[in-house]
Image (cartoon, rainbow, N blue to C red; front, side, top):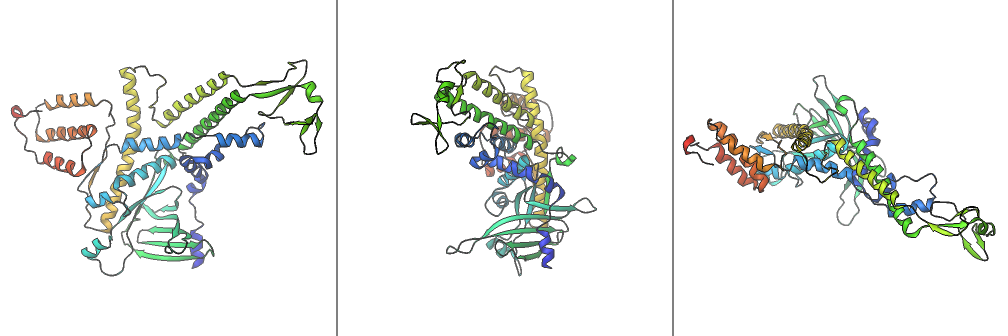
Length: 474
């Protein structure tokens, strides 16, 4: 049986095998730091190791992949999603580890931005014996939601009904052995099926594979959801984040060249005459010397070079032109604009001049449509999580989920004016309640409202007995 367990640790979905290297690169680009600079900085063919090592030490990284992936999420969750009927305690601790519902969904959104696919698992703590309300509260026995990256989801399969049949997740963990012993690293794989959850573990030292636990849930479905961007892997394509990383790498390398040009402008490059160089003699250590003075005989971009008397014939220092740097920086500015435009977040404009109304409307429409498609994906994913939690525990209600789809934060004044005009129409109570709900959303853009207070206002709107139109005032 252990042989079957071992095979579970070798399973990789076809999509996972084909994209693992790209996903690893995307993860490294998002993390940034010195490790990624050493991975992404390219050494020139004519660049010696000593010079390249200096450039590595001087290099810095503008982390555009992280900025872009977080920017999309921040736009989507800039307004608190409506979760009418949701348990407040679950909203405040959606993961059972202290992460709020917004924070778990923020992780899920960012993972979608980086990998083009991610998963949400809904797990129930293992327990034995009878479960009553007192024990449920005391031991916090309830479902919990966790966001997982595409790299963590090793394999999966769909059944003939078009739904998930099983899902295999990989985790690297450190088992706590108490404060007086070092933690034990291990590799775990969780197998979620329609009837049970199995946890397997392989220890780092001996490499033994064991079945840690096996818990039946009898939900009739896999307690997880797997989501991929429909216009990427959903149509057998790639993910745009790979292109984001490559453009970002180009900016990194260009910026490194510009930085070294600045250094060379300050210190210059030594040029000596050919007649002086002819008088040198080799030294025992491989260098060359003239009259007992040593100097470099290495030909590189930052080492001395020779020229014949027919040329200048005079020893001097040369340095790159400032125009070289201006060209590199202009290229980088163009790459940055294209980077945001490719993603659909064209928020940077080459000029500070005022835009026309048509240009503003088009930019807003482009961003809004990009974000709206992502909002649909997140909204449906969260709703599915609440449904799975309800399957585990029937006392957990499935709320009505509504994410914000209005991203015109900068045009708040005209929105309020339009709302006031809409209130002038003669309509029934339901219409005016919708006007009041919209006004509440606009109010939140001016001032953050406490969730409990917002719920109180929402209930007042629902129970509002509308006055006749002639007695109605804004």
